Image (cartoon, rainbow over all chains, first blue to last red; front, side, top):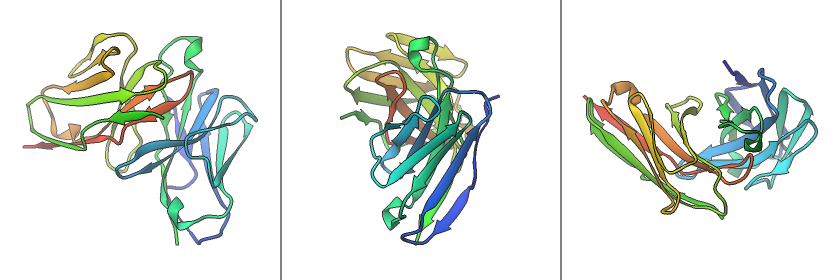
Length: 117
Length: 109
């Protein structure tokens, strides 16, 4: 079974703090994704990575950055946390892009509920 | 931009059938996914359609019409454990998924 783990289930930070959210997958997947999930808005893609050291902006990258130094680990960084970044953050991974054939479904971690005060 | 619409909430009785509709307008199309998400848990994959027609998987079926930009997820013989949010997502390239806001299904005894 694919396992995607996130470093914290709950996190409380103060406005202006630098925040690191860590995600690790154990199935040698090429692609990793960071989403935020808010009521009424669904999951929105922040950033994704299709290879080590590669990153692509998603739909809402402002105020975030990412790092992928190793294949299994994808970090989301809030450079200066703000109250509007209070949300549920979900990490996901998939084996290969769809061009390689197959469904290539995304597997999700349990989420980190971040509160910024 | 991407536009994916699904109803916010649905309620049904145990043993009944519920159909969750999803309409989409996206810049490209490379498959449609349905995920189930129980409260406080990660979304888990339910079904995938890339060609028109019906895909059946036990009590769950999913239908796609690409010309109409329409899909539905059919849940049969509802059980209490089916109470969850159901997320419709469209892949428009190799990697990216765009999600609808989700449909919360409540199953009543």
